[in-house]
Image (cartoon, rainbow, N blue to C red):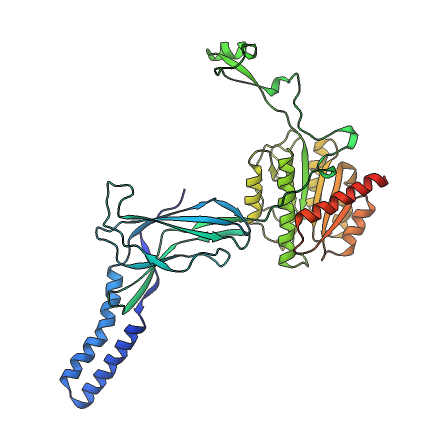
Amino acid sequence: MPRRARSSSPVRKPRPTGRGWVLFGIGVVALVVSAAFGRTDVLFVGLFLTVLPLAGMISVTMDRPRLTVTRSFHPDIVGVGETASVVTTARNESPRPSPPARWREYAPPAVGVQPSAPFPRLGAHQSNVAHGRDTIVLRQEVRAMHRGSHPVGPLIVSRTDPFGLAFAEYALGQPRQFVVTPRVQALSTGDLDIARSEGTEHELLRHSIPSADELIAREYRQGDPLRRVHWRATARHDKLMVRQEEQRSNPEAWMLFDTRTGAGTDAEFETLVELVASIGVHLLDQGFVVSVVETGSRQLSGRSGAGRTGTLGSATPTYDVGSADRLLLADLAAVDQDAAGRDDAVAELAAGLRRSGRAVPVFAVLSGGTLDELGALAALRSMCDPAVAFVAQSAPPDVSEVLVDAGWLCVPFAAGDEPADCWQRAMHGQRAAMLGG
């Protein structure tokens, strides 16, 4: 829900405009002339011109806007380069009509809000009317320029006195976070998102004879076949209940996300994040439960209780099927490089793979790593199928050499590379490895 605020605070304290400063200067000169030549008429002119800008400042201070402001985004989450509508609703809380003014939304450069525009005059507050003459809805299209969670707001209302001699700005309402996620590109399906080890295909299975934990009793709806009536649940609830078969799914995929501050540029890190986002969303679309291990401090939240292979209660951020793609992208929107890396990231990945009990797809997106970490990651090859590492161009050569020697498929990427192109190169490499093997 948007946050609401009725009080206003000055962004720029009341001050004279250019016109006001000119009149004040002329008034000061008139006062000096009147004192030098003893001209009483000039003295009155000087006093009048000097006091006039001060009166304008008092006017804009006393007649400040008193508005209730709410704000919403449509859609509420967008990707880099996409546009969204910012809808700002302002309601006059004063018993008098609002004075003439201009408005703009405060926002960082990453959000391209429109410049200052005229603010319509609002009628006096109407307590029993929802959307009367005291309310205005302001709309604007903004373009998300950079990934992150950016504050939009407060509403900046600026006004001058009737003679244009004084000016003030007021901030109304509270800011609301505008979430900009990394770009996501559609990736093609193929050998990278189906595991083959031990003859197990990681795909969604619907058993013809469901087990007991896959049967859910729900209330009877018109049109349900009587053969699905759950008589035990019917007796328990004293109303007609039917069996509902639940689709059983337990494919897993793991990702190692290098969030440590490395030698690469910010642009390279953004490409790394886009890779994680595109691969993660692709795997979720394919029905996988995706767990993400960060090499830096944990910044992703994920959800707990996903999966059936021991991830319940695990600290590893896990994303289940359904709306998990939105949750993953929202988490990735605020991810930043972390100067303090973790020593247990690969160990956490290894523990998760051991709980899986079989080889599962593993995708590492790396910008570096110590030899000990790389050795530990290379040793996990037998538990990964496939084992793919996307390695940043700035990473030391040891990263690819150690992993390739252990049987990992290493795919280099550089700042600005398209995730779809990197994925396609990985698919070609995996296909070549299968034909060569």
